[in-house]
View 1 (cartoon, rainbow, N blue to C red):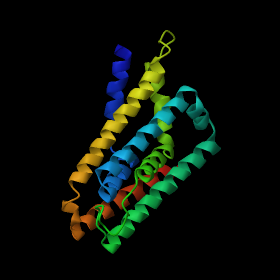
View 2 (view 1 turned 180 degrees about the vertical axis):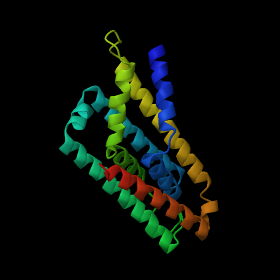
View 3 (view 1 turned 30 degrees about the vertical axis):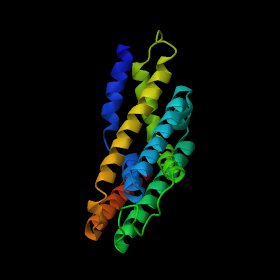
View 4 (view 1 turned 90 degrees about the horizontal axis):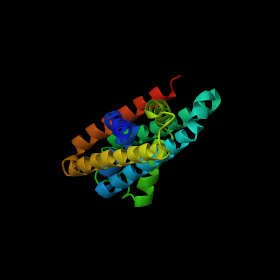
Length: 204
């Protein structure tokens, strides 16, 4: 139990740092409302569960060992982030609002928002490598068989709660962001950050 709690503490601190998923969730919540943002957060959490399960069975270890496979997945993630960043910058240039009633994104369905969050997480190979690097630090030969599954489930739950929080805060700000200048500033900032994250992910 102590080992599990130590893992949860370290994982919670690690996911507090905003990454691509956080910006995707916030952009989705601003465009489609809190419900859409929460669904995007759920997609991100499921992506974490998939990466965690892959780590447990060694898939991410194999991915890290294969330079070609790693590069392909990494590049795909970079392209996706750049695509989202360009969308945000185009919205800023056109002066689109960030609310559900805005002229930019149409009101997002739960499935669309979920897929957006899921894609953002699955295309970020660093999530898998994070699991691969972190989990062995809390494992031992005499560890119970259920411990890896419990750690993966805990990580998914932490991610979902945090992303839902981002969605809630972003949705609460939507009334303020009806103003064109505010929307342009946020779209421009988020777009720039996503482009920077994409460029960083594409770097060797």
